[in-house]
Amino acid sequence: MINYPELKRNLEKRGYKASVFSVKEEAANYLQEKIVKRNIAFGGSMTLQQLGLYEKLKEKNAVLWHWHQTTAVLPLAQQADVYMSSVNGLSYNGEWVNIDGTGNRVAALIYGPKEVYLVVGRNKIAPDLDSALDRAKNIAAPLNAKRLNADTPCAVKGDRCYDCDSPGRICRVTAIFDYKPNGIEHYEFVIIDEDLGY
Ligand code: SF4
Image: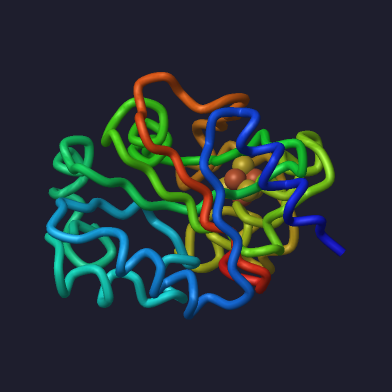
């Protein structure tokens, strides 16, 4: 059982805002009401897709997402007003982890748009930083490799990381966020008590 008030406090101590929702529809409505007339960029995320956020937010905003456009839009994402993503692992203490292949997502999350929202399902929450790293490496990355049909040993079953040397390796940058990066003004976790993404 996750103690959400305590998780929220732990994130707030590290400089983030945090909002907690029971179901994804409530979280999607919250973001749709809050973000209007902005330029928004999306990092690759199954969670954002499951919330239908691209479709919802594009009604009243300009939204860039290379999943719906082309990778040519990637550099433009750094100049957006708002960046949205998920995480690969969030520790109960408030540290979190993302693993990237290109690095565009972690770059934007460290020093890019001035407003960031991270949408996180309960399955991403781990007891501590080591377990958050382990889930990012051995759960999130292999399942992403499988989804992308990558030419890597983990993509066959999506079962675990084999620490491959494959040219198709999707894990090339592992970012650990200890506290809110100073250059980003509004950094908010939108936490949902449902399993979302991987
Ligand atoms: S390092 Fe290689 S085997 Fe491990 S998860 Fe990444 S792509 Fe898969």
